Length: 150
Image (cartoon, rainbow, N blue to C red; front, side, top):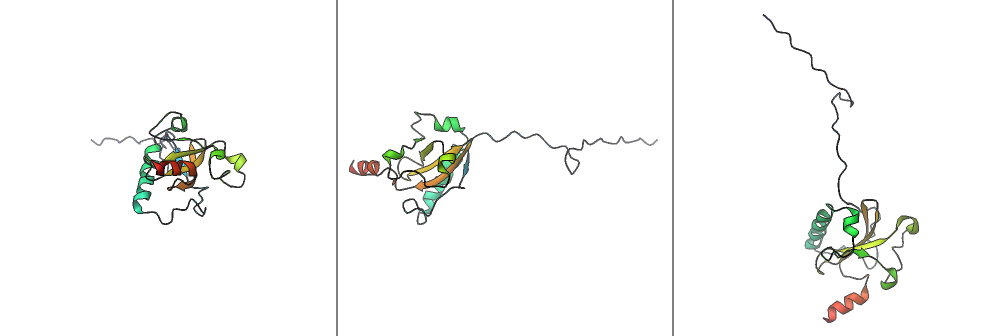
């Protein structure tokens, strides 16, 4: 009395013959260093301590769960994220080739409550392109002076 074992039908979608799962696209912001400028005379972080880099990574991880719309929504005091008004800064722009085509609105956000400075960059869709790390608040020199007085 031998039983016949039925042959299992495998739906062939991939090269291996295994049905490929349908994955949802990731939700939230991605960060890119494609336009990162560490050679800028004001925004170099070569000599920063490990605690700065750990704070940066923790902040990027936490922010990656937000959408670009949530990230850039006005009035969120914990993010301290807002657009950059070049006329109020020490710079006139990022100084990148094709900047006017790439950058719709430049943004900055803080790493912590003032200790580790800001990150400056811009969005294309759900990707935030980091251009400058500004641990010493050098983009807004007037704010730095005012915070040192108080």
